[in-house]
Length: 327
Ligand code: RRO
Image (cartoon, rainbow, N blue to C red; front, top):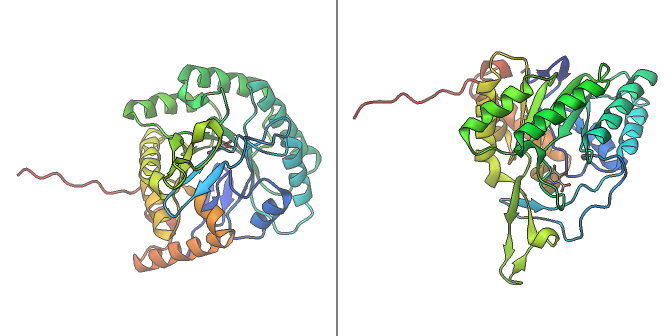
């Protein structure tokens, strides 16, 4: 059974990796992911300087959903560049994907230039990628850039004109969910203008509200209880975003990483059918810890065996559409 997948020139042993966000902020957490069965290490989104994030309580989940208003707590990008250097001492390697969420374009250019020169100077012997987060819903007084199409285009054009990225193997962007079908073409046409290898879809569904009926109050504190929703309740929206972007990228090399409510092997199968080359696990990774990667991988393999598939390419992006019959 071969479940390897490829994005740009980077090969992944499995299509299942962690999502940026849960349990990927500290070195300990990132090394735990290195020694797990996750296909890659994806870091918490980082900024120029470290941030403590929003007030607590800022995360809550049950068995259907999660809500968060973390507010981008992270140790600053140099910390995650340091992890990159430390990883060079281990014989075990896997792709390291730094999620970056600088407060403005200039910050991201500085971060990307530093990653690029570190890979060069330290002679890093494993694949390094970046995922540019254009979709954090929880920064107080700041909207999601990826909902402002002309601002996103301007931002990417400045970024790719001014940053050095020749040593970075793959570059992706993390998008929020879109709900209007015509938006997929608008966003895809922008993305196609730049050297982008993958799109991760979706970030949490922004600005949801979960209420605790005992307390008659929201379950989290910041922004009057408003936060990003994840978990199985977002899966259908995420699958549709994967499917609609995959149609836009059909004659390109741009790959899709599906994210949203991945909990088991059949979820991964659905995402691959819809057009995802890989998936990320967020809420379920938070619930279950690193063991989820091994379990979900085995469930995917079992399902593929049952369906007599030997490799992912046999069902990748091959969703059948229903025949329509006249009454
Ligand atoms: O830290 C957060 O509040 C956060 C981020 Br950066 C993000 O991209 N998505 C999310 O749900 N939370």
